[in-house]
Structures are given as structure tokens and as C-alpha cells.
Image (cartoon, rainbow over all chains, first blue to last red):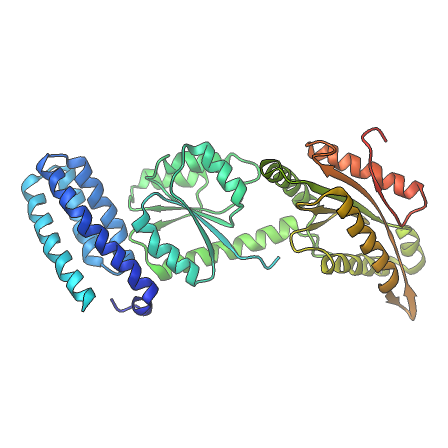
Length: 99
Length: 300
């Protein structure tokens, strides 16, 4: 997060809202995976691929791209691993952001 | 013409748009986001209403970005607005299809702020130069006939939608030929420039002055009723007579104008019909002795 605008309270509020959104969306994404609703999982990955980098969260963009690709196959096992990694990364980012 | 540059974003993913909107607003743009669109035709109508300087559109929104592109580029008054696709899909056939459909450029997701701002700035500068060449009168630097005709049509639609009145004023400089004949065409040019500057400085920023041709001008007075508009034009005429002089070879030249007025919706909704009625009013003003304002009648 090296860019000047990351310290702007207005932009930090946008990041906070985005992290909240992801935290709230994650249980539904996991439920969709459990139900083998791969299309919804793919959409989630696609959207995160597009939006993550806009908040300076490039790793989210990378994970989003991986989720999208795995859901297109679909590879259930890989998706489970990706969502677990993402959940961990999201929690770390939230803690880092609050610090 | 120092109005804010308007960016219209057509995208239904709020969390994707939020940082983009932030960056554009910080860069001084006026940003409007349309995230719910019934169909491509409604997108066309909203673009028409908002009159943006540039459009950023997601390819994968609903309706599909290609459908929106097609309706915008098929509209005679909207097709010149720069159109940029925002996409994460880099397929070559899609890019070719977009270029052939009239798209100006792409912004690839995830969006890089600096690249996005540089791209928009570059496209808008080119667009400004293009519009300057197409829509401005080179002598007076006010809008020309081409712009006036396009804008009158747009304004009538907007006023119809909001239930407002609009006054159209056609002005013609009195005895302009004799100014040219007596003092020469350079002096005539100076009179035209002085006149347009005077009018521009004494009307509302929302009123639109255009040169129709020669010494004829049109003024579109937004959200106005006919009585008030006539008083305004009469005040302009009096002030011009009292205060404005063109100095030419140690002489002071005064001049006046005659004006004809028509009103939407009083005189109908057809742009050409309103022009004809204002023209009839102008003819009447000339017949009655010049330096006056007259309302046109359809059968005059």
C-alpha cells in the first residue's frame, strides 16, 4: 500500500467498506461451493479479480483470478484450498488495516 | 464553457467502481455512476440526458456493454462522445469487435489509477480539439450553427421531460451591411466580436448563444417564460445602445439589433418550427423599424 491516497481517510473508509463486504460475502461463497454452485463462485472470483487491485489489495486480485479459473473447470478441491487461503489472508488484512 | 468535465460510468459492481469514482473526483471530474439499467435503450436515454464528456462502460454488465455501445454509436448526437470499455477480458476477437463497434479505448481491470487518468485526459484533450473545430465559430469563438441545431433538439427534449418552458431568440444586427460598406469588413468583424462578448457577459451561464450565420445569432434561454425573456432581451438591447461602442479609426460606432422570439411549448415542440417562428418575429421587428423585440406568430 505505497500510494499517497492510501492515507486519505476518505479512501481508507472505502477500503474498510470493501473489507466488510468481503467478510460478509465469504460465508455465502463457501455455501455456494458446498452446493456446487460454481457459477456464483466464479462470479465472486471474477469481481474480486477486478476490484481488489483498485484498493491496493493486489493479492486479492490474484486470488480472485485463481478462484475464477478453478471455478470454470470446476476443480472443487482447489477451490476449497483457495477459499481457505483467502479467508486467512482476508483476516490478516483486516487486522493489519485496523492496526 | 468552463463547466466541469463529466464522466459517466456504466457499471453494476459497486465495489469495483468506488475507488475509480474516488480517483476521478480527486482529479477534478464530475462523476455519475449508473448501475441499474433496464436495457440498452434506457442507457441511450440516460446518456442523452446527462450529456457526459466521456463514458466508461463495463463490458460484462447487464445489459451487455456491446449493446450499450451500439445504441450510443447509432445515435447521431451521442456518437462523438468518447466511449471506453472497462474489462478484465482480454480476448482479441472481443477487442476487435469493440473497435469496429466504435469504442475508443480499453481500461483493463484491475485498474491502475495513473494509467486510467492519463488515458482519460489524453482522450478528452483530443475530443476538446475536435469539438472546438466542429462546434465553435472561428471569428467570435461562440457556438456555431451546427452546435445550435444539435443543442436545441436536446434542450427541447429535456424541457419537455421536466415540464419547463424554453425561449428561443433570433437576433440580427441592424444595418450591418452598411457598417461593412462604410468601414470595411475588418470593422464588421470587430462589431460581431464586440456584440457576442457583450451578450455573453450579460446572460445567464445556462443560456446558450450561437452564431447562425453572417450577422444572425440565436439565444436559447433555458427554463424561461416568454414575458420574462422578452424583458431580458429588451434590457440587453437598451444596454447595448447605451454602453457599447466600437472604436474604429478614431470613430465611435454604435449599433443595435432586432430580435424575434418563439417559445416552447407555447409555439410547439418542433425545433425547425420554433426557428421559423422566431424568424417571423425578427422579420416583424425589422418591418416595425428595427432595434426592437417581437414575438413571432406561426402564420406570419
